[in-house]
Length: 248
Image (cartoon, rainbow, N blue to C red; front, side, top):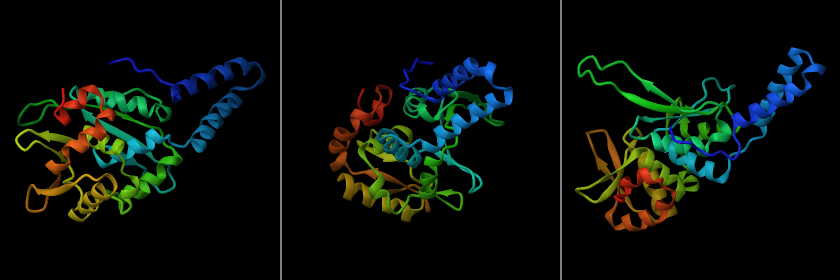
């Protein structure tokens, strides 16, 4: 995997705390040391707030293939990111860098059993954050009865950075039409209409529904908005994902 520089992340924090414990262990019992460790981590989690970059990026990640895991309402939320390997390894590593302040472990490659019919072996790469209180509000917005939805206030949340992450994670360029499609078919038609309206009113990006089956549709960026879209999202793209903007 490529080497990523981190400003400050949970791994750094763990090492810092362990160093403190090591230097004070002659004054404390083992249990006291563990309490210092747990208290420091819990304080960090409780007080942490997402940066502007993280806040804008997570919106696009969740609209795409990202998922928020909470379980019981008394639990805090964690973000899980998983994409095909090796095709989207670079993007997962990019997100690993963005959200490193919430992550303890580096990305993991998953190799599943061969498909019983085709024999194909599916590989993916995933990373997830620890559970943080600051992620609960995103779960409340994007999930209803454990199903992902598009929140009614998506217009307030969507940005060009968020849209860039949506495209990198779950969009594609259609060569025959010269436009970008967003893979939104798992959302209801009503939710997709809300997102289309938000793209228009907030970002001045026109889009329409493209019917896939009797009940499934995807969002198609209108050709008239492609130049504006590319101009405003390109700076947020990593080089390996520029092909999704028809740029190499």
